[in-house]
Image (tube, rainbow, N blue to C red; front, side, top):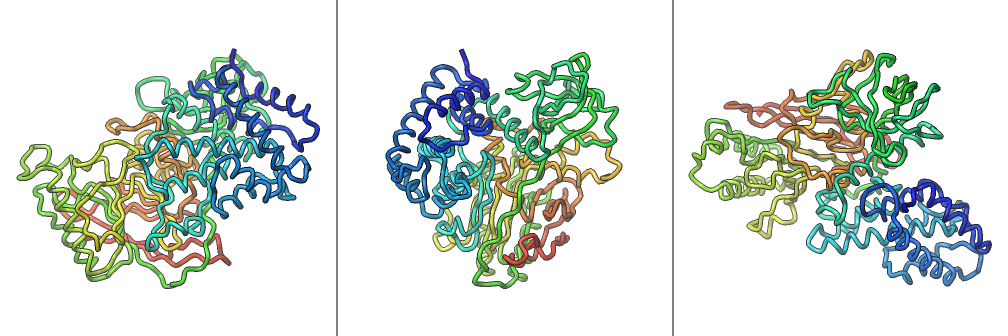
Length: 569
């Protein structure tokens, strides 16, 4: 016997109806879905008897805590009572995080119902267990951000400001999200299903849809079906091979072919989460009449005005840093001359620093080991930027021959970093979200533009620019890599992909280096930059330069990026 989300809601609300002394508006479908997702170990979207027993024992213990600290016997919890209850339950939280939790879960009178109290504690307990399991994983900054986003949001990324992460400030650069090791016990199927469910619920609420139908159910009248775009064969996606892979809750993972002939315009790619409205008279083909696509995350809330309101310059470059006919690193030397001359505040350098596709590497003609040459390259970069005082952000690449070829990719490990350079040199993951002097950057070295450009199909008379369409997909699908299956040759840790490659917010600046032609575009209010490669074959390539103005609380929608240029080396 297994219990679905709907059945769990019915059970809990019937039990709550017997406790007349507790204030409750009843457990919502969203809250029950969240509990099922957190407690479901086998990834089938339902709770087995053992899983339900664990959840029920937790709820009973939460009820005892709730009654004990409901000091005025009002049937609800004030902010003060909530703090006492959380401490009694073993959660030591900062004042700011406690305030955010109360804001997220409380009613307008700032009191928490019992059902909100349960949802909050289930999330807290699950997140703290994951943190304990990562004893050799990320530092406190990454854990603090994930805890904050996980507990105070509906399960996706939250809006994080520098004020919240102020205790972890490191010379003006704040990592908002980066590499974390995979969560224990999360299966590949469960990870993919979770992404469809989360984005689907966001789409349903945003478009005001009341009910979702199974993918393969016959329907003479228009119905809305949630799912992920897929291809019915091993070839590339085309208008005749599109299928909709249904979600776990409504369609039990079933799929149905899509007929796109009645859609005036569309832009689709494998892995895209959508809600399709249409008719399915036989149960064997869904004739689409409307497509509900993704919704971008909000931009970061502006922080307090910085003490130094002066504009900042950010230089952005992507490897390879040496021409294809040698390992002389001449373009890198030219770039370091630019840094010494212009003295940018921050330099963001993407790999590859020693390219696995380089002729000397592929033919094994190097005079030293991969590790030695890579460390020599890093040493050259660190020493070459020291006089300018620029802070360095180093992002790895799948093509770095001396690093782990897996996506999401952990940061570089460089034990030889001199002590005097540690405050200004930052090794981050791929992908990563950073806040630099009030401007949030989204960074990834994986050539997503090239990968998605090869798979996307469209009939879009309104948006003829394919790059703009792809960038919109990245922002509305809320992921640094929404394409699934991934491109051939890209090693993806699927279990970690959904959480580690998710966008926590819509960044002010999104940097996506690509083999495609360099560009600067504004898409949905986000400045998107492809700086190109610093080396093109045997010749020099391009790099980017951005001018940032600290954001103002009075103009929260204004992008802090004043100007962005792509220059030739």
